[in-house]
Length: 370
View (cartoon, rainbow, N blue to C red):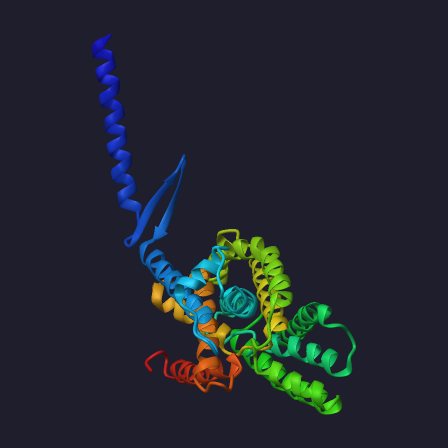
């Protein structure tokens, strides 16, 4: 009996050793194996480290945005307000600065993820909502409603989504020719973006002067005057979109495959591309409805995150944190660089993004050697 038990234990230990060696042999370099019950997951170590660093940087930028304004607030008081503790700065931090910061954070994350999804579908780092006309479509419908008083401010986000979806549908239909080619998709989208921007300017010249002036400020991408009435609906909208984003995080790896490989693996590329595109368009349109077209965040963030993590695909969590950080820090700098004059955050992101766009174009023309 004892001999049988010893033999069984020896066989079990040998099997465990063989399984351990097999797991080590197939584990890719740079990945850690995480286990939860019977399930196991491969985690990219560098992506985890970059994501943690971005989260820390975003937290620091958020505290700084809540601390600095016309009057400075100690970080300790900011933390008290965030924890719900009594503080003399509750009005300034909790009522005036916090909703603006939350809107900026959510807008940055939504635009960044939207850019990552559209770049994945187009397989082109130049593709983003503002480049292919999605943002301009959302802006055109919203500005038309603002200028001509067609609807109330509560319904503007819904009109923004409708405008973005309409623009994306037109671009997709015009770009379709036995499939979608990345270069054709971007060029037609760029043409629509220019036309829709001109149409938006026309709407503003036909409306009331004061309303047109407000629309012009909104068109540059501004967080000025944003409160909980914008932060609440935006947060709920993004929460509703969260399951779609989680699905996209898995589907984007399939879309990144070439058509022959995906077909051989049984991947439904058409459905995956449509899902990623619709999710990206809705995210970009919702963000545009809340803060206006904040340019180049969707273009910059995915490529910055991918280069930092050194992954073949665009990491959506790191991308969202990058976009949120860019908008949060950008709004802080836009408020304080020329104080007491406040610049729209879109002016600062455009100043950063335009040179990056030029560099991307030069790099694509030289085969990535620039």
